[in-house]
Length: 326
Image (cartoon, rainbow, N blue to C red; front, side):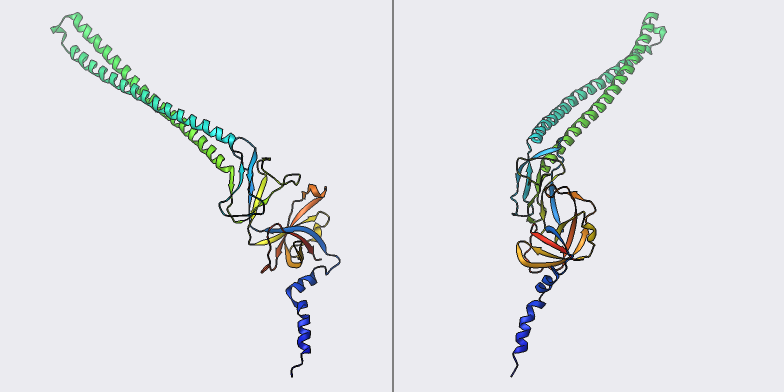
C-alpha cells in the first residue's frame, strides 16, 4: 500500500515552487529595494501630434476618439478645426480658375498677334518682290524720275520687311515669355492649392495600428478635450499596440544612480492585487523632466522589459509599482 504522506506534503509545498510564488518571493525580499511608480506601456505605439497645417501654429481640437476604446486601423482619432483652411482652399480654387481663364484669354490674344505679325511679314515680302520688279526696269526705258522713285520704293519696301520681321520676332518672344509666365503662375496656384488640400487632410489624424486610445495631457497634467487650442507638435493622443508590452516608470533624480541596465525588478499591478511580474531594466532616460503634479523635482524615465506575460491580461495604461532590487 502506498504511503499518502509524501504526496500530501508535495501538494502542500507546490504553491511555494510555482512561478507566482517565485515572483512573490522576489518582491519585497530586500529592505534596500527602490520603489518606482509607473504604468504598463507598449514598445510600439502611434502618437498623434498637432500638425503644422497652413499658416497657423495652433489648432483647435474639434473631436477626439473616446479614451480607452479600441481603435481599428483607419479609424479617425483626432479632428482639428478646418474652417480657416477650408476658406483658404475656396480662395485658392478661385485664384486657380482666374489664372486658367487668364492663360486661355491671353493665349488667344497672343496667338492672334502672332498671326497678324506673320501676315505683315508676308505682305511686306510681296511688296519687296513688286518693288524689286519695278526697280529692275533699266533707266534707259523709263524717265529718270520714275527710275529714281522705283529705287526709293525698293529701299522703303526692304525697310518695311525688316520692321515686319522684327515685329514677328518680338511677337514670338512675347508669346513664349507670356505663356511661360502664365504657366508659372498656374503652377504656383496649383501647388498652393495642393498644399492647402494636404493641410486639410493633415487636420484629421487616423489610426495606423489597432489598440486602445490614450488621451494626452497638457503642461498642467490636464487631459486634452474637444475645444482645446493646442500648439504645433504637442502630442494629443496615442495608440499603444497590444503586443510587445513593457512597463514605464519614473525615478527621482536622487535615486536614478541606484538603477542599472539589466537590473532585476518586480512589478505589482494595482488592478490585479497579489499578481507580480518579473522584469529587467531595459533603458534609463538620459534627460530629466519635471512633473508639475509631483513638485519641482526632476524625474528620469525607466523602461522595464517584462520577463513573461503569457496568460496575463495586461493592457497599456495599467498602474504598476516597480520594485528595483539592489
